[in-house]
Amino acid sequence: MVLSFKPRAFIISLIKLYQVLVSPLMPSSCRFMPTCSTYASLAIDKYGIIKGGFLALIRILKCHPFHPGGYDPLK
Image (cartoon, rainbow, N blue to C red; front, side, top):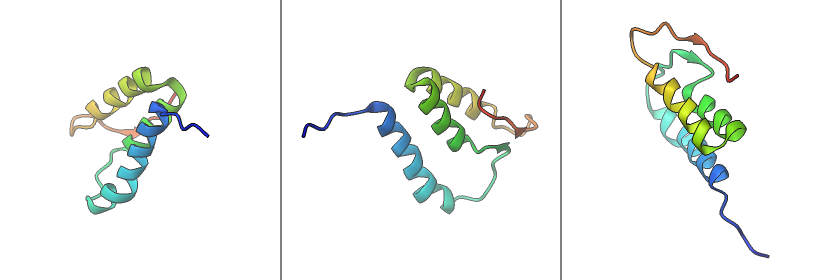
């Protein structure tokens, strides 16, 4: 059996690892629903690494005190 490297699955696994190991150690301060890490995982799974990563980056850049946040689902 030959194992092949799947970049999309690898990136999503890194996000899941962050959600399990790092996120619980930080205070809850997310202003969006779903959280940015969930949004990034969904975006990369749906659109691929390039477009999904870009959508995730835009979402993370919106995370500042001057943005109201709220419900912002992946389209």
